[in-house]
Image 1 (cartoon, helix red, strand yellow):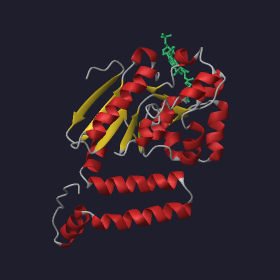
Image 2: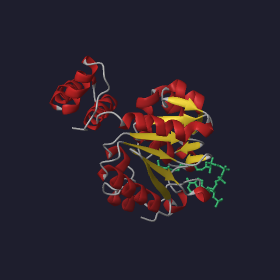
Image 3: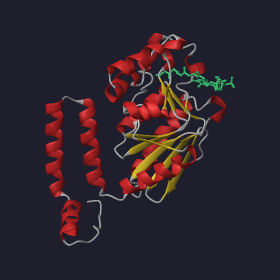
Image 4: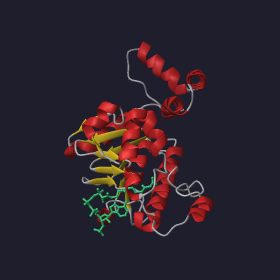
Length: 261
Ligand code: CAA
């Protein structure tokens, strides 16, 4: 399929979605969000794909929702459409994805760009990455998870400061605060993200899915509910042929051969 605002590629078991609207700093217009949703549908439906990388350009991951598109919009219309959710096909499509998602961020990840990265399972940053929720500077507020996921990721004090001041945080600070898993040189970012995705995709798919759902429960629920969810998911892996193979391979001192069952 031809895309206008993104590039979609596959390398072995890794799907790569590149946000590509450089003239507008990858501003997340409705067309880009629709294409992103279609690409995710395609990669999720493809049994050969075990993990997905979402990336942007070297200078910009994404500078947020498209301000030009929002300029004349009013409350009633946004409410009925539930913008930016758009009836399940909007921004939250990333968070609904069941395959592991790695955001590989270079340059600006601001507003909706930061929210999009946070909707992924892991953020890998280059040294030039800059994160922030600058909506306050244009008279509005984060609307796609910024006030919620940022607090859970980096704590109230720093999240409140970023959301209320609109300042950006560099990669080093983001790593210290726990927003990103690692910082790598800009020229190595995509390769590192691809390698991380490939290492995840090499594991048993159903086991990987159980683990990511369990970790996301920790992010989204209280401790008791999360512990119960994790225990049930752990017990559930004992029905998987891959769990039996993994343990048998360990006992027999050989590499496991996972069949994703
Ligand atoms: N929407 C639309 N266009 C944008 C954009 C955005 N969010 N961000 C940048 N652009 C466009 C600019 O209009 C400009 O286009 P032209 O060349 O046609 O004028 C081009 O991208 C380059 O931008 P700048 O000239 O501003 O580049 P800069 O290097 O001086 O600054 C920047 C870069 C700091 C990222 C700055 O562009 C900026 O502050 N952008 C807006 C960031 C922002 O406020 N994001 C939040 C959006 S609201 C949101 O996301 C709500 C939500 O939660 C869902």
